[in-house]
Length: 510
Image 1 (tube, helix red, strand yellow):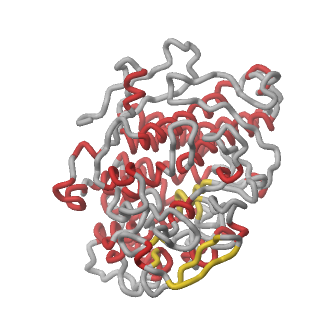
Image 2: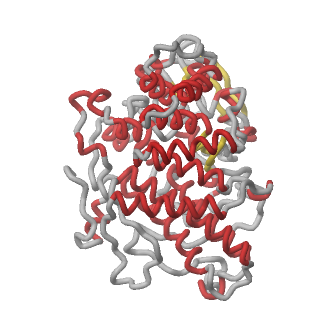
């Protein structure tokens, strides 16, 4: 991820109805789309801009929608793993924790904007590949494959959240007719898998060290398996996962902690990782800072520690918005090393970076309304200056989005649901358990329940639990009378429905 030239691409504000087909690059009065897309470096910069839209999921802004870590609210506070803190959290967190989803709420507008911004940027690359430029045939193959991977990735996230979001396969040019209708699930799956198949064929198996973090052919193959799990095409999922497990470059890291330490990023367990650089992100190939017009250096990292670390009078002055629940604490089996690594509790030594030093002292349960604080991505190893911005509001630690341990559990699920070899399925689950210091499953174990249990604790506080609850249809089991089936989908932002003049149809119940 060592690259010092940072190119800032224009932001496509609020979906498909207000996008500009222009590039805003410094100096603003000299560079246009027509003059920009010429060199490999130009196209790399445009690709990095699409990646950078993912960084904005967790962004903080006082200028656009007033985002404050909205994606954590959608993927953590919504679940049975995380509560809102009744002293420190904002009202949006409280509403989402209470499963009060409204189409006018900021979190849904924020993520929708960021998803379609990323798609727009990927489409810009695709539509300029065959123009008057200096690219070789190989350049066009690789860049086209990478842009299609990103377009597929964003569409897949949109489908998981909204069910039937628009399918945007080109850049709109008519400013009076930019809105798109809902796509069907069949249309979305077809387009996503077509793009991923092209990506798997055209991307390299690996990149050199100056391009760490870019998707590879193995990333695309892994996502082909994952998308087919959502589609419930079990044979296709099994085939893809089998190839990755048997022939791919991935492995479970010997130590679970290696996946979340700032100095062991992009390791052999990482399939897709959201890059954050430091200091000042000058060593990061991805573009950043879309949520602030000024050169706001702290936003080039991720404000995870600022929002996650203990609040309510705890040292370090953090927010403590996302405390773990008793339910997730109880979900860990005795002897599971992931429990102590993931959650602070009474009797632990608490570490935080503050006032230019690592502070350590006994953890006080009074710092959290649940008596617990998230420790994953944190702890003694990560509470150091090398992992934090100078103003101490952000850290540089990457977001591990898709890990090999998750792929192994998805492979197990596909085998179980698809009538595959249950011995292989059990082995995937056992591999994850043994790394956590737990014994292998009994021969009589219910593999479905074992897989779901492992997925919850292995991936605790990573952005997957909500989507598993929805996909497995267990919302009423988890939330009881608070559950409403409309929650299987997020509401489309009311602003987008209004801008489309009704072309975009709202999800039922909102």
